[in-house]
Image (cartoon, rainbow, N blue to C red; front, side, top):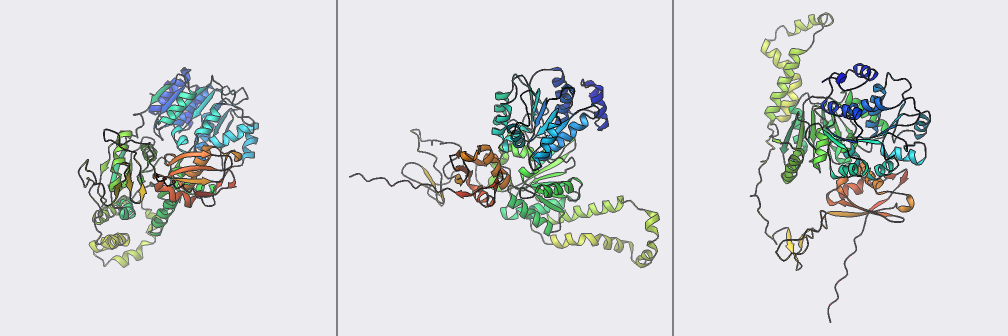
Length: 582
């Protein structure tokens, strides 16, 4: 199958050839004819790096009437970087169409400049949800007559807390528009958007639904918590030519890991929410140009990162959800290439590993963290390979070699080789001399289904049949008549902490804005945020207990829509003591 067989016009085919596209990817092959020849809404499911932008961009450019001045197409995506990338591709797609106007709008840039561009005319607007909604409220962008709406990376937009913004935007679009939703996974929230705003849509999947790319090898290492960073170093050393992306849960962890790596001599930098946009652009540019070998990032910071040659994705901590792992691993093996996705985990995370395997349709290969001897051997062979394949400029180098030959003439061949190798190799020999095996068994240490004895060490039971964790309370509810326990919901008492924030209805604050603030500043996922309650002058929100301290620390000096906000732990009311019966 070639692009010529997909129904594209000559001027678009000319642009495709100019961009160097050869054959269409699977998602392009399936989607482009459906959009051009059909009239239905569409859901496209495919991994990042499979060419989704061209899948919806090429047919949209073909269907738009560029002689009409009004905005006809809107593409909504989660991040500034992805917005810039998509708008750049659209400009290339429409290279040979006279008068085509593509405008990108996103936060972190001058809104005045973006307003001026839109007023000059915009056939297609590529936007992040927050900035687009702002421009709609200012009546700068009018979407009441758009013909095509694309929701790109829909699952990531929902993970970032854009649900309310998307609802507000889509409610202002005409009922007869065509909507094309693209996503790597299809969680319930994405299904809900499709059901609410799309009519009789066709679903097209490239690969299995909610799955990861087939050309990724999935590997997990099981270590003690104290050995997590040493294990990371060994894995990096075992792959001398690694060009990798290391995911951490929080900004603090990202900073700490990157600082340790740089201190230990690795070519690494961090990408997290505390960086200014200029700093962020600088780091990403260095990573794209391979000036740095390892990029340590949070999930939020890495969204929109478009690099084709990443060889390894390393999950420094196990991701909280299967969908997060799918997105992380999708950063490697792009454009038909192969890659390796690695998870560092402790023994308590085995269930989560099984859940990811089930949801993503993959199988992890348990591997042992390389020993010092194996690392030294791998580094030696890599060094020798470079020595054999290095290009020699005989003419320029030759004039310097006469004294070199004279100095080395007395050294035997074997000793000469050993000396050259030792220049680079000695540091690995010294570091890993006597290095211990840090692996632990991947097998459960107790029999499946074994129960802890009630009343020993951790748990005790009160008279109501509830279990008490000696340190925190988990109320699983009273026993039923058949002896089973009632589950009072996914989040048990004690699994969340309540927080106060000093903004509310009078500040025109939406729940999605608070969720985005928490995700951006703390590096947590949307799934770790519980109930958000907005009152007149202030609000409350719940956070999973194990990330509560991180949230509290990261929210110091935080700003929401340009204003300082104060976040504090909310005090739980103590239950009143029961009155004794007289």
